[in-house]
Image (cartoon, rainbow, N blue to C red):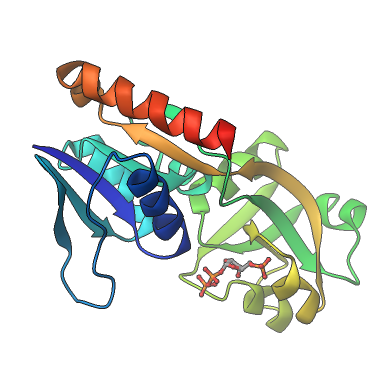
Length: 210
Ligand code: PRP
């Protein structure tokens, strides 16, 4: 049995489409049900998890392979093989602040209070600038922290940029670009080498032909 960790939401739906169209799986997931485990092919099951939990399931070996964003992978720091960049689900991890604050002014300060869903990424970035910070971990609508003054700036993913624009914020610094990644548990990579490398090649061909 091989287990695939699929993230809930758009990333998971796009991946499921690829897995179906390449014939890696033969049955889709019933997204209108509350079930979390699905038989999707002979000897293949899919588990439906929150995107940021995918690295945990794959690192621990509960899932052999999985799909998650580079953003979640960087934050988690999971010890997994990052086998393929799927190219979709693109977004940018960025520092953002009020439009009235320039990059020079913000990064020139001695101390910053930073709100984020990605404390590890934020810590690493500001440490690399030797900037003293207090990192506040939030769980959603991070932009609000910069608008209300809870924080001087935020570290968050920017996709269309609409949330920043509509809240009077702007990107101060891009930290890295993120796309969806196909990740593999280290033991499974060797135990299921033939099937995993075959699937990886099929997905790669599909993406290149798309
Ligand atoms: C994400 C992210 C930003 C927004 C960026 O939040 O944290 O808030 O999307 O997208 P945009 O650039 O296209 O506007 P999400 O929608 O996951 O909700 P959350 O903040 O409640 O986690």
